[in-house]
Structure formats: structure tokens, C-alpha cells
Image (cartoon, rainbow, N blue to C red; front, side):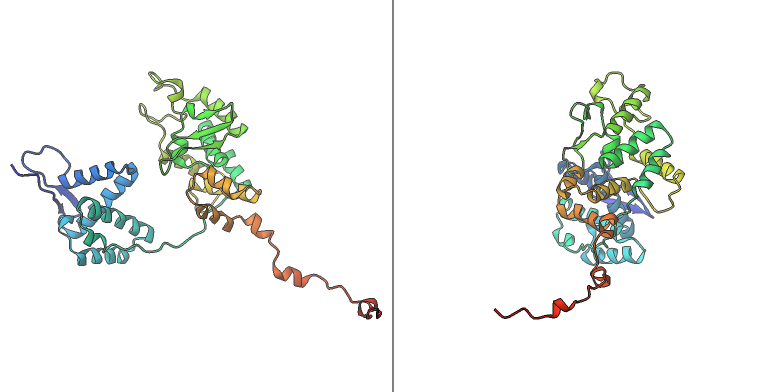
Length: 328
């Protein structure tokens, strides 16, 4: 029997996987091969799902298997994304997944070369004032929500870093928190403020323990989820933030990541070295961290404009100023 066909057929906008008669899997060989290629490169699970979704969208537009696409069809699909109103960010994300399929799985470098990316506009990240942050933390709906939100702002953590914290990551002797294998598969340390430690100790006494059986104390989730061996999800965490922000009366467009932006901006305004902020945030380049100088309104408002010098009262010249010095 020959090898299974590498093909994805499409019915209307949904995919129907075509397998060989002897194959009982529910995943097509082409999709399985792409999954293996992504796993071999240790791509993040979220990235893998995004790439698969992007290729499904391309196949739905193409109405046949992506491995039969032509260069002109790749070009027209990119025009279709723009005309359909897709944002630049979403359009680039879709084409990144399609390019992975062409370049890695199908080895069609000629088609991969037809993919282009559009430069995304650089927007200022939303930042809360210290008073607004205080209101959000105060209006948290529960002890769990207050502990998680205080961690996100007080330590500059990403949402995923907060929900994945385990008891063993908290070092109360050195007053640090260890962030394990975060974005870019990197470990780092952040400070552990006394207020955060106090909240965590209160929460540890109140947290649910239904799924702690069989787990070493240091391996237990700080914020366990609703199913066994799972932590709280970032989506659930995001809802807690939305509820607190709404209760605090904030009407601006915000996300949970706003707390991380506010953490970096407030440190910068207090005079913290930007390289230390970069290390705390776990960012690869200083250029990424430097964007917070554009939203540090406290620093910007203190800069003296050249107009300030012009508007200062000029000292009148006296007769002594105009007299010539005596000849030597």
C-alpha cells in the first residue's frame, strides 16, 4: 500500500480531512506532519494552534489542499485579507502560519517567498496612573483576585506567568519570585514585595486544596483551576481584571497587560535604571523597554521646553555692565 495522501479537502468554510482507507486517525497526514514540524522546533502550543488555524483559513479560501496553491493564489489571498478588513496584526499572524506550512512542511520556498509582511503601526501602550492602579486593586472582587492583580502590577508579571506560579517559586527568605520558562523559554527572578507576600500567605490559607493530593507542597499551584492538575486560565484571570476595572470606574480600553505596562512606566518615573527594568520584565532588547519612555508622563511633564527659557524675565543691564573696563 502506498503512503497516505498529504491532502486537505475543504467543504464550504470547514475542513474535511481526507485519509487513506487504512488510516483510523482523525487528523490528516498533512496536518499531522505540520504538527510534528512545529513540535520538533518546540513552538509554543498557542503558536501551534494559531498556525493550524491560519492554514485552515487559507485552505477554506482556496477551496482545495494548500499544497496545490500557486504563487498568484498566495498573492491574491493576501489581497483578500486586506480587502476583508483584517487588521495588520491579524493579517501578519495568518501569513506567518501559512509561510511556515510552505517553508518547513511542504519545502515550497518559492511560495514562501511570495509572503510579505506589513509594518505594524507603533502605538503607545495604555498606562494607568498610580491612583487608578490603587482603585483597581482595592475593588478586586475576592482575595484571590486581589492577590493575582497585585502580583501582576507589583512584580510586572505577564498573565500566564501569574497563573503558572507554584508554591516553590516563592522565596520568602531572599524575597524573590522565580519565573520558570516564560516567554522565549527563559527563567528570571523578580522582587517579592512585602505586601505581595502578605497577600499570598493569606490566600494560601484560603485556597482550594481539592487537587493537592499526590503533589509535593512546592509543586502545588498558587492559583488552582477547576480541573485536576490545572491552574487557573489566563482567560479567567482576565475576567477578574475586567470586573475590578469596571468596579473602579475606569472607562478607557484596558487589558490585563496594562498592569505590566504601568509597572514599567512607574518604575521609570521613579528613576529606576532602564536596564534593571529590562531584566525584571524579561525583555530581549533594550529597545523594547525604551518604549516606556514615551508614556512616562511624569518624566515628560518635567522636561523644560525652550519656551520656558524665553518666557523667563530678562535682567536689566545696569550702567556698570555697559562701562568699558579701564585700560591696563
